[in-house]
Image (cartoon, rainbow, N blue to C red):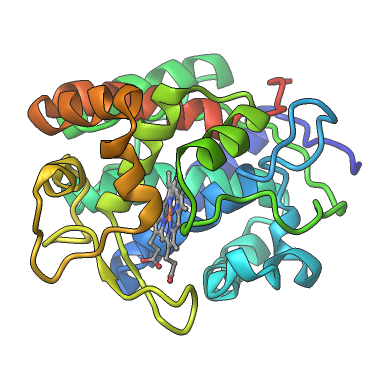
Length: 277
Ligand code: HEM
């Protein structure tokens, strides 16, 4: 394990600067969905028992990004290299997770304003506050920096297989230390983006506006037929399993409940195995 970053004033200022670059990158390339998938795949390899994997930047290595579940993610890794080169102090692990905040919020709102800097502690509260005001009702994902980079890649096969059902999803997410509610809320990430035949073998988007972060994934999921839209077997499982279905129904009718649970679950995902310094 490499040394963790020293999270001092300078580090926080660097993060703030990097956030502006990330914002520009995401809006110019409309790449929010693939960035969200990158952050999730770096974090989702976590194994709570052995405390290996997790949001530690190890997906930047060929050994890991060449796992079949990660097909296409080299594009996101390469897009982020210039930001890393400009802000070398920031760990890959932090960089990959901080961008998610932009991915989710930009997906929904299309813009994001920089915030003022006071002190590390204030910064984090400040961030949540500003985002809350800024986005009026969108998912506010609190970001705490300080993740260590690791050069140890997890073995292949830790991420979920889209062709499988409820017991597989539970096995994979419970291994990370996450719950049934987390599984459904986080699957709402499919409100953004699409599947690409050359990456996963699946094709199409889950919602009519794949660059907008909202609860339409759950609304479409409850429809018998969603013409032209994608439902992976693992998505369908969420309406077939009675425990999962309760959350799907809640999120389809109450977007605020979805945003609240998504923000909580996403924070958990982005902090698996991470103890803030
Ligand atoms: C895309 C599977 C959970 C976010 C995909 C794709 C598959 C998949 C097969 C298509 C990849 C491609 O062809 O480009 C799964 C399975 C999950 C899961 C089986 C288990 C529950 C999640 C979670 C998130 C997420 C938890 C985020 C919190 C995304 C996003 C895309 C995507 C944003 C679109 C990427 C793009 O447009 O390039 N997922 N996923 N997924 N996934 Fe998931």
